[in-house]
Amino acid sequence: MIGLSSRNELRKRIHRRIRKKLRGSSERPRLNVYRSLNHIYAQLINDESGTTLVSASSQDKGLGTAPTKGGNVAVAKLVGRVIAERACAQGVKKIVFDRGGYLYHGRVKALADAAREHGLEF
Figure 1 (cartoon, rainbow, N blue to C red):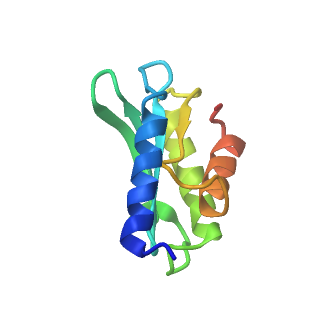
Figure 2 (figure 1 turned 90 degrees about the horizontal axis):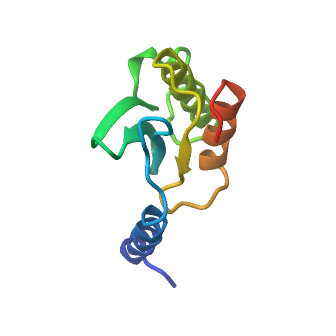
């Protein structure tokens, strides 16, 4: 059985392998997703300059009528909507999706689908 620390090490190894192939630029920043047990975080990163353009998380105050628990699919959809709205306000439409070593399922998929629905193109 895989323990929690070795499961996270496996995810980090997968993430490093993915990051060798993905680069965010000023034209197409990288949408990075981090998922913890209780919260989900997303940020648009320009890897050329090493800056974060916009970010959103389940802990944001401006998330609206978010449920108190941040570790579910409904909150991930809200975070996806918020990150897409903030990106569109900055003039960003096209992005590169970085799933962070997580499976494209559940909260990660919900965040990506909500971001697509609200104007981001992967």
